[in-house]
Image (cartoon, rainbow, N blue to C red):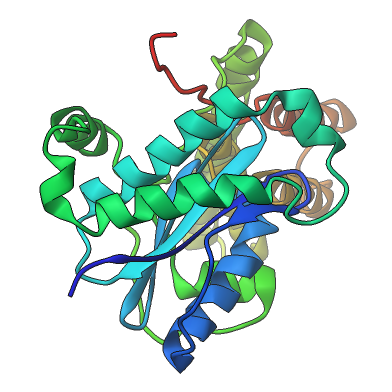
Length: 303
């Protein structure tokens, strides 16, 4: 039987639980899934704002906006559209009921435990599909999910952040997460163009280095590797600037470190100004990646 089993509301900044549905289920797999949910609740801002995790026979779905996250556990066969309609309804009611100052000043867990009443009533409605036909608009949510499908979390996401494993394997849907980034600024676009230029120069020099090796066996093949690594690092920084990625800032710093190392190795083939140019562009690109943050999507309830 498909149904909603558990739901909770947390503060995104620190994972503080604000409210949750009453839990009577003691089934082992469900308790393990809830442990995954608890771990996720402390790291919501490292993921896109709408995600799904497959955990054994259950699914964990969550959304977050305006500093508050809404999570649920449901059976694996529960429709995605209904699941996110359920979370959307919790979000709408919570935003209307509590102001941001009260949320940010909460100190104790479950400071808004009275919201449990609404969660329970909504859960009962969503576990009885007949009662939903006149109360929610599934068409709008179906359209939104088609246009912006939930990001499918993988076991590696949880292992890397929380240090525990997930039994069932899940796969990424799509090339990149669906989280949107802030609009690109002029400095960001300039840095991206310069980074592509540096990557192109490295690629060109790498091709010439290969030609030199073919003509002269004494040439060092490591120079070719250094040029191509520099190219890859520059282009990867452009990718990180354009798309959201987990640990995006750390990845951009590692790419910048690779640019520095490759240029240090190529000091015999480049003058100091060329090296400084490549390093400066890499540093500028790293800064722009850090400045371009994920776009917080505020819900539109026509109010």
